[in-house]
Image (cartoon, rainbow, N blue to C red):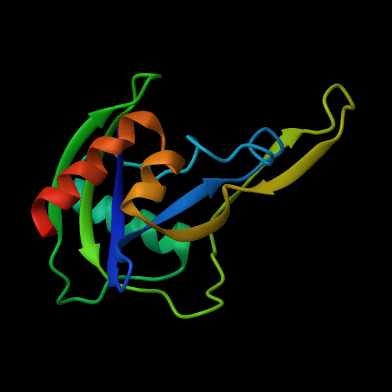
Length: 152
């Protein structure tokens, strides 16, 4: 189980959402269809929304304020079987915001016997809904549709 937050904002071009690009050598040259909402694992007995807020803070380095209204976007099942619960909230990041996400180690280059460290998320970006539908994982497109139905 995972939980995440979909930050959105309104601009002249319309509704925009913040998506995260996965880090590491496997994803470095992939773009369309690999971005995701910032999310992470839910600990046992942890409230899903609290887990989503914690993961957003850990991965993005920003927290929604205490008065934030969270809109439930339901859940989806990703192709690999993971269930993702999501909420949307209106917000923004300052220009040149630095993401703070975790890091992971993998053998790199392959079969070299060496370990290399990579960020879990290598970048974030705001996209219009139309752009986001091309960028986001296919199964997470439902979150975008649900957001549009809720906030227009």
